[in-house]
Amino acid sequence: SLVRRLGGWFGEVRSVTIAPRGTTIISGYDDGKVRLWHTRTGKLQRVIPQYPGGAVTCLSLSRNGQRLATSSCGSTCGFQVWEIGSRGSTQQRMIQMIEEAPTTSVALSADGTLLASTNREGVVYLRSAGTGLLLQTLPAPPGAQGFWWPQSDLAFSPDSKVLAVNYHNII
Image (cartoon, rainbow, N blue to C red):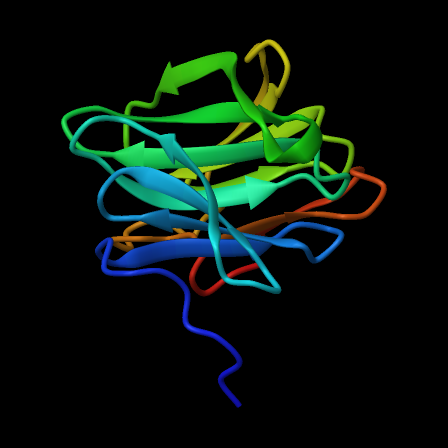
């Protein structure tokens, strides 16, 4: 059953996650902003602005709750990594990169040190979440190309040694 409806009208919600302790719901919107909500009260705690005129297409929170990765697309497409501080405070991290194609999914490793992202061509990029350094590029496997939005999800294993990628019809 519906427990609570959060907030007023901010546009379409594109992505949502819950912080590891369950006290905060994080949502990304068409208006280009990320909103952090108190789970129990439903009150808006904080708004994080994104790219002007760009919808927040996906977000990922590290399992330790320390880093938040967001991607958005408008006049430019890219993603950012945010450091989540004490009491819900956030500081923008140094990563803000533009992909050749819009980012379709992002995932942070459990400890928040690795960032995986995908684009419409099915390419997976693995980066250092702290510096943005590109560590590895993985092309889409045969049979996964040619879809408008080939990936819908990325997930790291709890030990961060395995990255699962959903290529529409292939995992």
